[in-house]
Length: 280
Image (tube, rainbow, N blue to C red; front, side):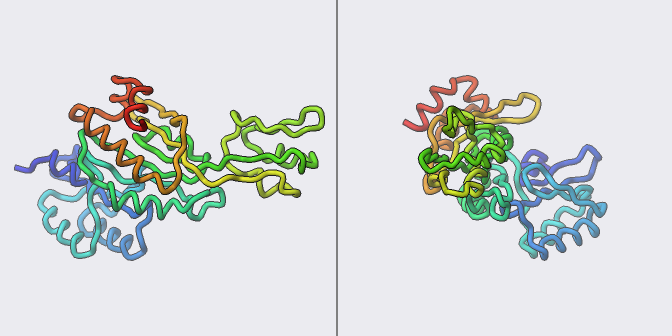
């Protein structure tokens, strides 16, 4: 008798169609190489119904694998280094954006997500735990739906004395953070999302960006009982991401009940108390 919960934790998920399974394959920071895609296509044609589906966490699923074919399919995957996983009470596939190649990306998201995956992927925890690494404020909404998310930002510095009031920054700013008052350009830091789009359009270099930092989002959750995470009031540097993640996971493992999501922990204990316990 198959243990369906154990199989699901390994990325082998029973379908509602009796006798069939979906296999979930892990990408590397959202990418499969061409050889992997060819192997996956071959698998879908030979053992499934010829279809492959993408998930919101950048994994790939192949449905309609017959129960009697599972052993042969798993051997096929092992021989070709295809990774099956992404289930159970553990750290799930690390979600990232295309910041490495996107013109808006402030950091190498592929590199960071890969490092996070190497260290944390499938770490056993009281419940499932979703982490994301995101390259600019355009992914703010994505950050809010994860148990833990890091969002790259750069604080903007305005040199008012150098400004010639060309107002190009006003025209490109998506946050309407710039205004002119009595012949002086003003920057509203509360409105500024720190995306940096104003920097390259300034003809006199009156706008400068500081070192990239990361907003830290705690306790986001989607689904039927959604909770949108808000960023902690302090940021972290790139070389602090691993340490912050270790602290968050250690705290979650210590206080969470079995199957309890991090969002539920925060709702039960309180945001301020959780943040104090982790960061102080």
